[in-house]
Length: 224
Image 1: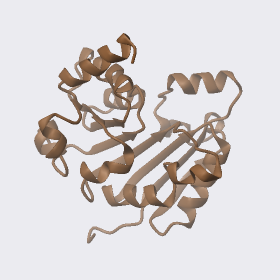
Image 2: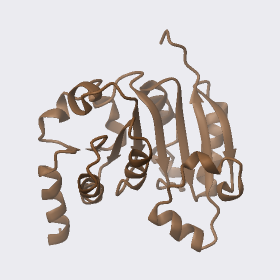
Image 3: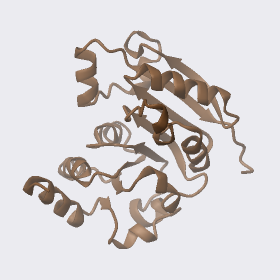
Image 4: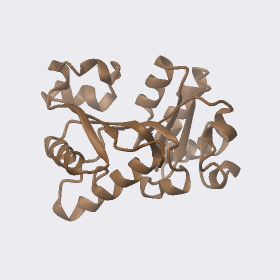
């Protein structure tokens, strides 16, 4: 491990806005994010596979009346987002260092208002379908965490992942697809991404890739 990465891991260990193994909230936060961390009742929004937390921070700045949690397994990436959020004084931001497959340990049913999945690894090989963050296994998890009419957003430069995800959501009895486009920047749905453009998205655009986008809500009633 390089000294630079090691410094970032050490930063996460001391950062008050990072929840990771070894910290008290890591094992007690499930279902209690508003109570134990944010100390308010504002809606919770997740950015999964958040990387450096560009969407987490961008959304938190635009919507101070909501709470935002960026989730990623890479401590060196989270450290970047954590540092920026602290420098900006954003009290409505937290970062969780965890693999997405273990989210059941941190979030309860009907706890989340929105989930953002922005440019995840498409995992295009057939043998890697189980790793795709929009396969049936993960969609069921998202549905469980989201409230009735909770919203799921996907942005991706990968056309195969977009098509796979759209088919999965449309065939699911868990979500209703409200909008989708294979060219977000020339679509009436453009405003829904809140003008937040990640570093890698800028790279994709410069290379001539179109940005795909899907917006879906849970099929769920308040009785769940």
